[in-house]
Length: 584
Image 1: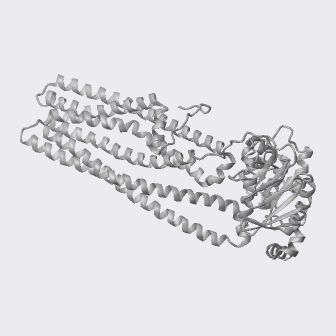
Image 2 (image 1 turned 90 degrees about the vertical axis):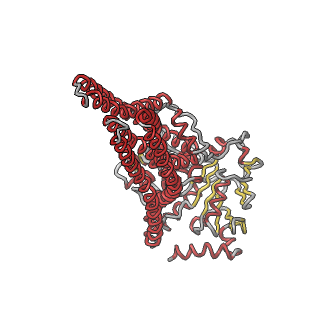
Image 3 (image 1 turned 135 degrees about the vertical axis):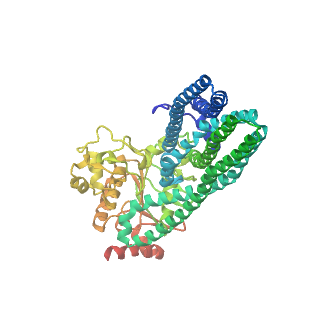
């Protein structure tokens, strides 16, 4: 089985079926052993009726107790050996499934790490969770086909040969009847694959929505929107349930036909064999053997149907994994160094120009427009943005991440102590969501850490916790309020102390008093360094050097905050609304 530190290999992401074959090819000897154990096990199941027929014809019917004892002993020995084979088959196939499970988990985790901060921009967290929890298990289960599936084919061929030696008519009925059963179930498997694909897609969307709701429940309750969102979620849940019913309906038919048709077929063949025995064309022992052979065939046919069902679901889930593996991080084709002198950032698409060493605000009618500008200036989206005279995509990405930090107000907070969340293992690591571990010097007495906490008005958070910075935090700091989480994120970004800090709505969840303190302290703390904030709060705008007012994603006006209030009606209407809310 794959070791936790072993390289899982390079997965084949050309399609779902090819990915499943790659999982088999990564453990060929184990899969071959599973196929061998499964084949011999099923063949010996078919040998049992043969041995029983010989015991009847050679021992019981003529009254030869010696022959009866010999054949009965052989029957016992084969049964005991087959019991051991069954154990080995199950043990081997369990290892095959576990290897596929762990290998898939490793390639999914490696891909998530490879995508880094671009992951959340390409796929929702719910999709990743669905892949990691549900799809991986289904994929591993589908590999059952390499053991019992291969054994079912071998057993079918062996039984067909044995039936020819008994009766050519019965052999023809069996050889033609079993494929007919499989063909009857086949179309249902195709329909199941389509229903399962739609169900998985809806499940991923709903899982993502659950995560969003869990993170913003307090905000929704405060705004009075909890009931509205609950109604929308209830509707999505009902649609998912209805799709699940459709999947269940197809699955029930597959399983019913997989069990019912072989049983019906067994009855037909038994009736035919009984008529031949009554006519004297076959012996009583051969009649018993025919019944045993066909009864044994029920197992392989059921395995075929089950393997087809599992394989169909496995292909659907493998396609989702393959789709995830095909995602690519932001390409790093840059070879040039970052500007050595303070230089302006420029986004030609919007017209925003950020002068070095100044506190600049982006005010947009639609907040997404301002966020898009930040993503382009931070090189988290393709653009023609420049830093000085150099395009951002021409600068080596590691240098860019060292000098420019994008601080999103919804960036991830990893579980650990509060100190772990605040003090990244390296400075200027690009988007703050990708920082994990604290450096050794990040202690409660670190002046840089204390300054960052002070600027973000977060000292009271540390003081209110039972163990200060050593207090354990839940993932996403869910044991803190929304405003506290926002201040922790800001403190983490300030602690990185980048040359250029781009922040998205850094004070949107704060009360007016705290927001005013953060705005004043931010200007002082970032004096002489380039800082950009997206906001419509007059408490923050009042401390900025330059404001760019965006309309339909383009700069409609630029200048100091108070000047835009006097000269730009659209800006005044947008900001004055916030002023009224603050005063109210």
